[in-house]
Image 1 (cartoon, rainbow, N blue to C red):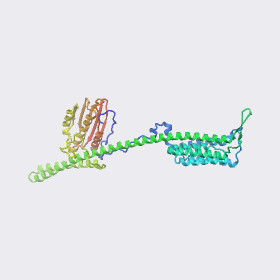
Image 2: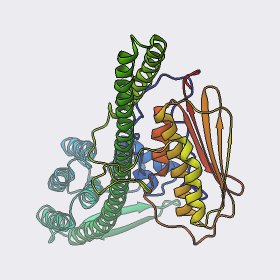
Image 3: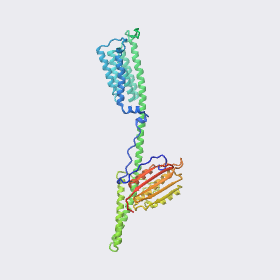
Length: 473
C-alpha cells in the first residue's frame, strides 16, 4: 500500500545517469526461514545443526569412552575379581568396540543397517566373552537413529528384534543353570566383601537394561522425528508462500509492462501518423512555399526522433517479458477487451484528474512549477499515470486523510512528482491489488529515474523523478 504506515521503502529503480535499460524483473524468491530459525535454536545448537559430522564424531566418542572403561574396568579396580579373559577374548572385545564405534558413523544415512551390525556385534561379544563389551550402548544409539530417521513402525519392530536377539543370546551363552560367578570387592581397610551373582540374574540384568534403554531410545527418537518433520513442513510451507508471493509480483510486473507497452504503442502510432501528414504537407508545399516545406521537414525530423526514443523504451519494457493481455487499470477508458476508447492523457490532464479525485471527497492540493514539459507524449503520460496511481492508492488505503499534496516540479532535464498525505483513520483502508508501487517503479525505470516511497512523521510520501534529454521541448 502506498499510503499505509509501516510499509517498506523502495530503493531507486534506476540510478540517475545510468544507461537506459529494460525494467528489471523482481528478484528471485526471497530467502525464507531456515531450519535453525524455525527451531528457534540458540547459537550452540545452530552450530551443531550446521556441522552434523561433528555431532557424529561426538556421538562416537561418547560411546567409545564408556565402552573402553567397561573393557578396562578390572585393571583399574584392583579388588574386582572376575574370570580372566584370554588373549583371543580380549582381541574380540577390542574388535567389537572398534567396529561398533565405526558403524555409528553411518547412523544417519543407514540407521537400520547400523542397528543390525551393532546387534550382531553384541551377540558375538556375548557368545565369545560372556560380556556385552558396552555394545548395548551402541545398539541403543543405533535404535535412536532408526526412530529419528525412519517411520515409527520400523522403530518399534527394530526394538522388538533387538530385545529378542539380546534375550536369546544371553540365554544361549550365559548358562542360567550355572552356579554363579564370584565377585570380591576390597575396601580401603583391606576388608573383602564377597558375593555371588547367578548367571540367570546376569541374563535378566542385560535383558531388562536393554529393554528399558531401547524403549527410551525409541520414545525420544520418535519425538525428535516428529519435531523435525514439523519444522521441515514449516520451512517448506514458508518457501512455498515466498515463491507464490514472488510469482504474484512477477505477474503484476508483467501486467504493468503490458499496459505501459500498449500506451507507448499508441504514442508511437500517433507520432507515425503525424510524420506521414507532415511528409505529405512538405511534399505538396515544396514548390509553392519552400519555407513552409522546410519547417514541416524540421518538425518531421523532431517527431521521428521522439518516436524512435519511444520505440526504444517500449522495446526495453518488452525485452525480458512475456505477457498476455493486461487488465485495464483503475480509471482507464477501455472496453472489456482492453482497447482504448479515448486518447491517452498527458501532463496537461493532471488538473482534471485531481478534480475528479476531489469529487470523491479527497482534499487534494495541486502545485506545479518550472518550465513546460517536452512534447514527448510518453513522458507526459508517465507523469499522469504516476499521479493517478498515487491518488488511487491514497483513496484506497487512506481515504479519510485530512491532507493530500501533489507537487510537480519541472526542471531542465528532469521532472519530479511528489504525493504527500497524512494518515487516515485505522479502519478506513480497503483491500488493494498491491500493484501501485510496481507500476510506478516500472514507469520511472523507462525514463532512467528513481522512486522513493515510505512513511513520514505524519503519513506517507511517494516521490518519483523522471529524466529526459535537455532541449527537447
